[in-house]
Length: 581
Image (cartoon, rainbow, N blue to C red):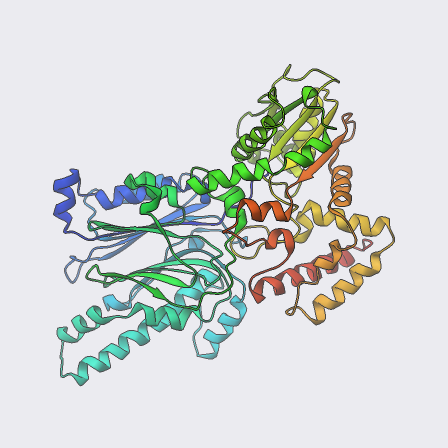
């Protein structure tokens, strides 16, 4: 319902046969480029702010370009960058990126891939990724202490500079080896290109970072790599055969693009890198020791494509596990209850919920009550008018309920800020005159920000946090806010002190306060919120235990530090505005 800015998406292809092979077999010399386009379009859901591609032509003679990059901004960026690519494009290594800003920084200079140029092919580096680094200040300090002066302050650019520096050192190490062996001239260059060890480069680079990431790169001499963070926070999948190697952020994207079964696609493991050498040989290397698995559960609930075979079943289980609390909310009156969902990402969880109810009651009444009308172009008006337009993004199916007789149960994948509920959903559902509205979330209450690649970094944006603060005020417990503020200032690393803000209240108490806060003036129908439980989340998604959004248990020290800092920033902003805590 409330669109979150997704993390980014990545796509890579390494062709392993001569280019004529693909032209003869598939009838096109643009086989690699066409497949990259499909991989990117199938992941368009992961980023609509910008897109970029890069490719390397290993056969380009000296004096001609061999490493190419195109970038564009906007929702049509994919089409634009592929339109720019010359029809005679030839290359063996391809990389694509879809961007959603998680830092608030925008502009073409922040669109991936990032490119570091050099006259030596082996020292050229092109980098993109799905990531957010939580300790970028420390890495920036490390670079400047060495005498470097990065031109941009951002995790992507600083990662490029640090990795580029390590790639330079690797090339210089090989240069010394070659000279010790008596090699001269081009023989030295060929020795370097044939012996670059990207595992060395990655180990000496990624050890400096705290965060969630899938980092992808190409070198001008033909090395290709993808490395995943040691907690497995961000996802990556790959496929290998004798024709190509392909990498993407999501499994079904590879399945559809290359007509594969799910078992053909492998997942890159935490701390692991898939490295492809210049000659096409590939290997899996453990770059950093794997840490406690913290694969993101929000990927399964919302961000990743629901067409993945495992995600589809997980989302159905998320819905089915809500049967008992929903049954209680409607006082077990299933004869007078209509079930529906918010289009479109909650649809699979809806099927699971309805399937669970049909095990209890054969005649379950289902309707498509909520309709997503159009994507309104709200940028054409001022802020006051924008909220009014946004309220009409959704509409209802009139006559789908018996007025004043039927309960209405509506499931969504998550409730984050609550803005759409207040400005739109509750108002339009009330027009149907339901006896009661039960608003269901297939995710638990989102209580804490994300710092690993999703644009959700401010506590005050979260309706659960605002509700807890309001409850503290209602009960005269403002001293707890001051106590937590002091702990966050004095000890930002050892634990997440913000968890204490929620400790005095039950989930049901926070639910009731959220309803009170979001209920629009003049609404008649009573409303009850039902959220997924933490236990239910882990039962549905057992292989993705990363739940920091809901529990505040961040997998890395950087996440804990930033959450505590977010609370400090919140309190200081409140005091600056002279508002009561």
